[in-house]
Image (tube, rainbow, N blue to C red):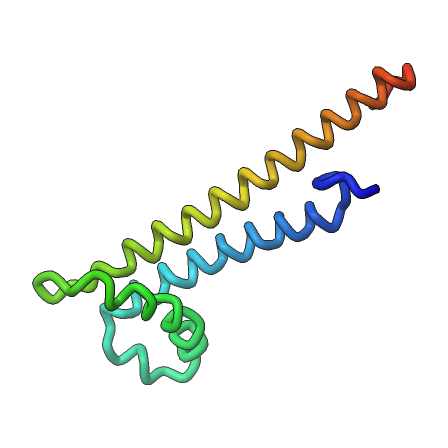
Length: 115
């Protein structure tokens, strides 16, 4: 029987997804800073940044209208990304707590000392 959070695959998945969200947060920050330079969209090296982030940012562009010419939709995009990051971190914490609980049960039932 598999114990959730006790396997290495779950820990790798949660840690990898957390790292992905952190890197994606940095890429979105770079994209927003590049939006202040309109000629940046024509630079070939920066095209992957726009291609990766625009579909996600377009989800929020219709929800918040521009105010005085400023696009405030990235604020909602960052908020959503931070909620996902916090959720991933809390799932990782729950997995670690379960691992400690399982180790405590082994010690209690089998009289073993675990390092």
